[in-house]
Image (cartoon, rainbow, N blue to C red; front, side, top):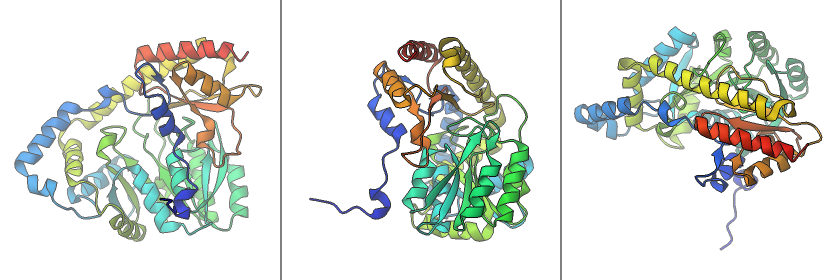
Length: 395
């Protein structure tokens, strides 16, 4: 039978990262292409005990339907935490618990985008977000990422030209894929421009707790005096991605519409998972666990960067990230980036070609992405030495 696929989905291509992961699933492949937390980053004993306690004391709540906005105790816990630690909850804001941060992006798009409305995004950017915007028939316009975040002059030029711009999508902390952190000055300028041209900001912050060096920079949401910023946070990188628990904080009127959108997709995020997160935040050493993750990832990041220097040297350029999970490497202009990535894969090292993160297939880039959280230290050493050998084929 021939199936007639909707226009929304027919033009979408599978995530290049997921396809690479499938194609290189063998145990002998060095997985620089993923972005999974390290096995030791999971507080398994905590989750095991919390789950047993919940199922012993309150199994019906855990196994029953919940409200779409989220498990009320968790919503209150997250509100308090985000207000006291990050100052991101305004008087007119509300919160909804979502099934992963990807759902925040989906709900914001569902609520805000009509066909051919414009989404302004960092270029490069997170493939999951880009595909979501495409699925709602949004038109993507990219703004180059510099060493300290979005090019603000380019952003204003785009805002002047694009009258149908609905929101600006940004990952200001340890951006995926570039690893770049947006400076405080640029965060202020971004908000100022959004206000000037009357567009919203979707601030995606899944990596914010994974800072290894330098000082924390306030979220863009802290500047929000008129309900312009939709803030997305997640427990995937500090607790468990498999639980699919995240949240968004935004003006209560937007949250109400996002709640309706959620009811049309998954009704509510699993209640047991939300109860686990709430208990973990309130009665376990969450900050101590985050500190351990930071130490682990800092060591892996330092190891990978030292090996980039020793094995690849001047063959690539990169900015060492202050946190997060990724390093963005730029090849010389005379090197075929796709061929370099395919040659690496043939030699059992999986990296992600930079084209996976661009707005459109014709957008050129000389970059590829490396991840240091998934492979072991030994795998990082092995993989970088192999990339050093691959380099020799291109010089």
